[in-house]
Image 1 (cartoon, rainbow, N blue to C red):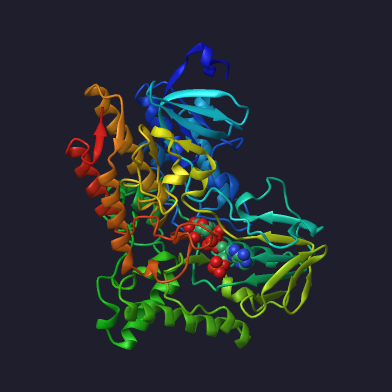
Image 2: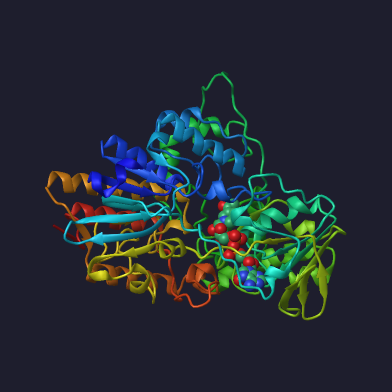
Length: 554
Ligand code: N01
């Protein structure tokens, strides 16, 4: 870091914070643009979310053929995913491969946490301070800090008294955690817990699942991917599905059209959306369509009909189908009832599982309903609820994240006129296109609040954001502009639009981390843009084509 000291007056063109998928691609683009760039990363390696979330059973529930970069044809041709849904170790290998293949590591400073970022108006640059109080100066900042990168650790009473082991799914140790023959408690039943529970249930002596709200989940129907290995690629067609042995080869053969489908979609994913309304078909036909989707597995379930996200009656047909499945899969009817959600399906993020409901038929698993039996406190040997003491060797917190704004607020970001981002966004994040906030010039957020981000296939959204930002930086260079800042009018209009489109959407119909409901004191408004990925991209392109409409360039 010698070079970064103020005395040397070394000012970077760009500092990227984070070396996950957003940070890696930003760095690739910055090097291509020959910018003087450095990436800082608090972890000791690349991977972001996939570096930290290494709990047993962690996988991506976006299909691997889609959850990957498309900026390099060679990369997407050469990389071979082994399963329909890639495991965390495989995705982490991919991130490392990308870092090595594109020689990105030399520009990454690992084990480095940025504590504050302050815009110095007189100098038109940012001053960042790292955990060792070193100063880093830069003209531009890219916050590639992730949407789910600050843990939600509820303040359970007397947690510190517990003498056993405690882990959080979002910060799982890198060493092997031995759960064999131990009494384990897991708090939370969101996507992380739903992946983790079936995996550890086989190993532990007894597993206690502390559930506050049941979550909808559909089976992944994960499977190995097949490759032709040199056989003839004649008669390749449009890729039609995983049950077809040629699927991977067909995707690779037609990658651009496969990617285009995702680009033109709501969730940046090539999903087979049935354009019918769930209410326009007979009960028998509807059930058959849901059954087929259930059997094929994964998030396409929610695309079984085009109106499941908007029409509550249509949504109820899908919710009822899953509720009936729970009843048929879980033998103990009381447990089945506790596992059954009563809110619309797809409000909280639909989880994708491998034997989640079935695992409750095992004799070494107990579901503890925190609604009727609230968690009161920890004690030296475990957890006390209103009805009982649970003696535990290990507690796993699967309690999620302070999503979307948590990490940005943890960095003390101060813009023009000494305004802190945390104060400016105290009633909700005002962030034009999810990319930039007024008063914070030359600072971009990747998949920030106000962008589709977590409602989409993240890597596709990340690439779109990064491409847009680098086109913008290029435009500034060509037009001799030094500063870009969102206008306050444009960001307020975008914020209002974002709230409006969310009103009738199923995602607003319950309490979830999308609206900050999981964090005490957090502003309650819809954070990601729910108007759809392709519409969002249209707007971004319109803005840039009109000379960065809604931004002030100086
Ligand atoms: O976190 P969550 P997550 N007492 O916030 C409970 C992504 N992801 O880590 O619903 C008791 O969803 C809370 O209960 P309730 C994905 O976007 C992706 O599971 O608030 N319980 C809930 O059950 C996902 O949405 C993938 O009542 C408490 C759970 O903890 C996001 O990450 C895999 C509590 C938290 O669920 C977050 O998922 C995994 C308390 N005080 C995750 N506080 C893949 O792509 C919270 N809870 C594969």
